[in-house]
Length: 385
Image (cartoon, rainbow, N blue to C red; front, top):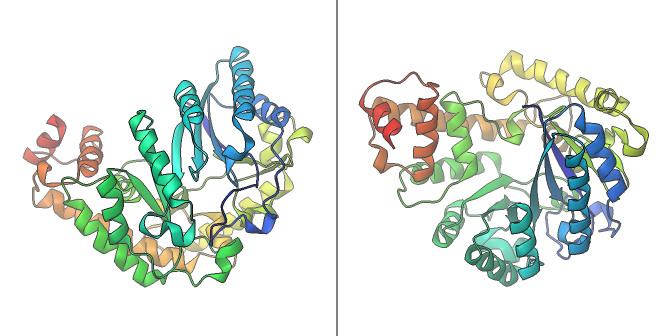
């Protein structure tokens, strides 16, 4: 099934001021994306994709208000009625504005909810901590599934302590190395080597935490290590797989600051997907990324997994056409360790019930797909789970 991810930058407005905000240079403008532009984008995408996944983003998208979102759902319904397209919705929010009406809306329209929350250090980096914690309790009580995304913004962020926090709440989460954009340029940022070591230490603990919660980055790296075809955003070529619509109607590859130098045109001025990805900005972005990938392919044993990484990470580290040194340091060290660790799990016949529940799921699926070619008691135990 042909699928595209649409990052819908609803607004640049936000009720918080995160210390590492990559959107800070836009002045938190309150303009909203036009629903007519949204409908035009969906219409353009209809002919090329069977599944459109909308990621409602910002700024803080909920500042657009519930009436705006209900009107947007009417737009989606009109598009569905004249096609066979499947439209799915996710939202990334700081959570502070969610109330009973928003919860009912998410349930009615099947929204997947991501909460941006930095765990123990949330008040230091983001604020609104008590509001967000209260909202997460309400979401759990109402049966709304959600996960958390934490940003590792500087050298003080303690991964182990924050894992304990999310584990204690029974919440799956992911963590991301901060993008050095916007306000984050003024922060020191984590040391790549130290961050990689902290990831490895947490992984070794997490792997055998039988009561632990899912950490998406670790689960995805394991899937990659055993031959699965899943990729996280930073480890794949996202060209033609993502598209971003901003409040002023401009199209980009995604919503990150560095990619604003490569606009794909205005939605009101394009008539096809082919036209969007043939735009001057799209061609320039692809040209620089191809050059980066050539260098990566020549010198990196992990190229088939990473494919040169994320264009915006490369830009944020200095040059679209060159491999991002900090990112590469972290990926090679962490992924290399995880791959070796999982290999030892197989070779030593580690019992299924001694592993983190998230690990069991990844390994069971991978063996069922015959990604690993493993035979015998270990694989049989996974297949029975």
